[in-house]
Amino acid sequence: MNAKFSTLIAFLLNFSFAILEFIFGFSFNSSAVLADAVHDSGDAIAIGISALLERFSNKEADSKFSLGYKRFSLLGAMITAGILIFGSAFVIIENLPKLFNPEPVNYQGMLILGIIAIAINLLASLVVSKGQTKNESILSLHFLEDILGWLAVILVAIVLNFTDWYFLDPLLSLVISLFILSKALPRFWSNLKIFLAAVPDDMDLAALENDLLKLEEIASINQFNLWSMDGLTHNATLHVCLAKADCQEDCKEKIRQVLKNHQIENLTIEIDSSKDSHQVHHQHNQASSGHNH
Image 1 (cartoon, one colour):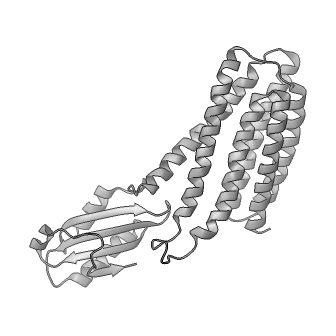
Image 2 (cartoon, one colour):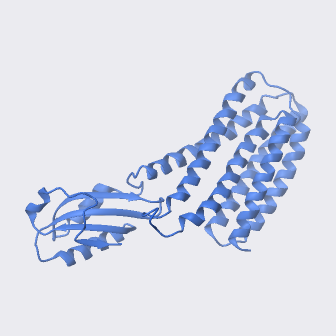
C-alpha cells in the first residue's frame, strides 16, 4: 500500500470520527470524549494540511519565492499546533469548574463508543504499519496513542457503571488536554523559532566558529549567519578574512567540508584576501567572491 493511500485513510478516519466524537460527546455530556474530539480534529487537520502543503514545499525556487517553498510545510505545522493549543485551552477552561461540580454522563454510551473507537484505531494502525515510510510509521504511532486514550475512557465508563464518581470524566478531559498541550506547545515554539530565522536548536554557532577558526587559512570571521528553511535543511552565509591572499580556493573548500559535516547544505561564502579588509562591512546582498549552493 502506498504512502498517499495510507495518509488518505488516516485523514478520513480522523476527520469522520472526530465529527462523531463531537456529536456523541455533547449527547453523552462527556468532557473526556469532547477533549479527544479536539485531539482527533487537530490530527486530521495536520494530516490534511501536510498532504496539501507538501506539494508546495517540494517546489523549486522561482521568481515569487526565491528561497523556495520549504516553509509551507512549517506553516501547516504551526496552524495545526495553534488549533490544538486553543482547543485544549478551551477544554481546560470549560472543565475546571466541572471537576468540583461534576455532572452525570452517559457512561454506557461512552463504553460503547470507546470499544468502537479502539476497533477502528486498531484497524487503521494495522493498515498503515505495513508501510515503509517515516510518515506511515508516525501515523501508526498516532493510532496506537489514540487506543491508549480510549482505553482510559473505557476504564472511566466501567468505574462509573458501579460508582457515581462523575468527577472522573472532567478529570480525564483535563489529563488529555494537558497531554496535548505538552506536545503542541513545544512544537509550536520550535516552528516559530524557525520562522524567525533563529539558529537551529541542533546547531552551536560558537562551536562552529571555533572549528572554522582552527583552519590556518582563516584570520578572522567577520559575519556568520545560520538559519533553517524547514528545520531539516540548514543554510549559512559566511564572511571571512584570509591569513594569506593566495589560498582562496583551498580555504573555501575546507570551509565547505567543515560545514557539510554539520549538515549545512546551502552555503554562501564571501572572502577578503587581506587581514585588514575585515574592517570593511559587507551587506548580505552584495555579490560574493565565492558562492556555493
